[in-house]
Length: 132
Image (cartoon, rainbow, N blue to C red; front, top):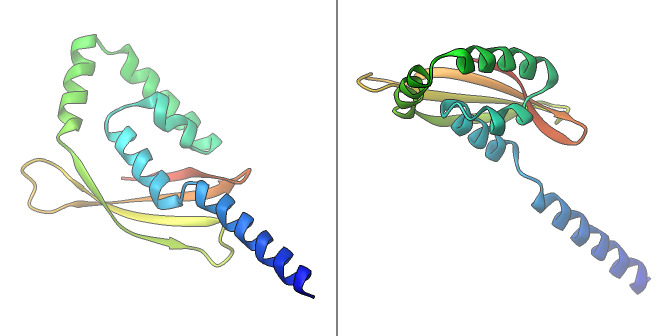
């Protein structure tokens, strides 16, 4: 009986260690939004589900077609944007997370609401919907 208890405790410990190393949805959302507002396509595109990734790749292609000066100007403008995650909500089946955030644009008196949805895809959280 003592061995069963020890084995069970060990299994719970190993499982909790494995879960601790996986990034939480809030961390992924924070990383995604930071890269998104920096136009760091190489960082945020792999964090997207297939459909959103395809849509944002089109956007990336459009930006890459701009002159280098226009790209720099766009990046400089976006670098002044700030955001704050307001709350996250895990759905009942624990495979979808809804993230509400505010975007603070220079000279604005209040933040503008934004929302993203994340879903578990192959045991990884992916951003599947982005509403600005």
